[in-house]
Amino acid sequence: MLVRRYTGTVYDSSRWDGFELRPGDIIISTPPKCGTTWTQMICAQLILQQPDLPLPLDRLSPWIDMLTRARTEVFADLEAQTHRRFIKTHTPLDGIPNDPTVTYICVGRDPRDVALSMDRHIDNMDIGAFVEARERAAAIDGIELGPLNPPRPRPDGERDGFWRWVDDDTPSTEIGSTLRRTVEHVQTFRAAGDDLDIVSLHYDELKADLEGQMRQLAAHLGIEVDEDRWPRLVQAATFESMRSKADTTVPGGGREQWIDPAKFFSRGTSGQWRGLLDDADRARYAARVRTLASDDLVAWLHREPID
Image 1 (tube, helix red, strand yellow):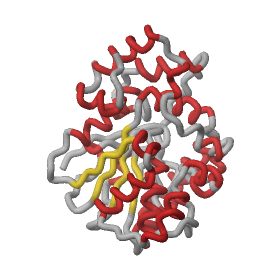
Image 2 (image 1 turned 90 degrees about the vertical axis):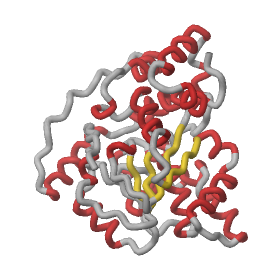
Image 3 (image 1 turned 120 degrees about the vertical axis):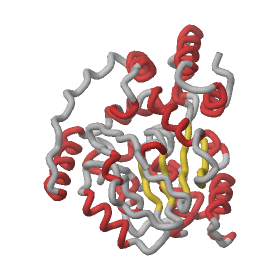
Image 4 (image 1 turned 120 degrees about the horizontal axis):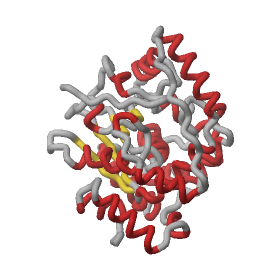
């Protein structure tokens, strides 16, 4: 099957080429800042059923597309795993293998919260460390990297950053996170046929009822959990717990790639955009998102009327 290629400074979806899926694999495919690491931790708790992970989450559930780890090492890690595998990607469904024997989990979130979370995420990245890791990985894999795009000037404040993210019309195959990329990612899953096993989660529902959502996911995946284990597994999957163990739960290849690993798990709240946008802003945003997504997807992502 032909797939679209998604590329950026630190990821390349073509790294999936040649990867052999196993029946029962779980692919966690979410737009950035929509609960990816959270969903990985939830899957880790359901599959391993031990609150203290045996390895860093990034090694248990590697991001195949990520250029900061050698592809050969990532493939070797996954090949050696004997437990049910749960793999991370930020690539939409049309850029990864479509296999009816695996389960795909896509997570959505109010894009207005994604915009603010992404702005803080970028501020917390150690760009130099990411670039160095990218070069080391390429040397191990024996590949030549293309030139890096020059860094974009940082926005002049949170409001400017929000509108840059909302209005950016760069094709989704060429940029990591924009409003366009976020809604198009989720749309690829909603447009999929019935041949694939797809689970759609929403960030707000995870916030409102983490245990209930974990129980539903376990049932869908056919995973049995003894009743007395549930409290500890749910606690381990909370934001507070992940933040307290940030050195082993942050993504990207390790704590050294973040200025403050704990800040990766920032507020973890919904509705943080309310203090930023006035009525005119909200109307402008609503008009923009409706040019990018169907009415049903707009309603599902935002969980409330946006006009």
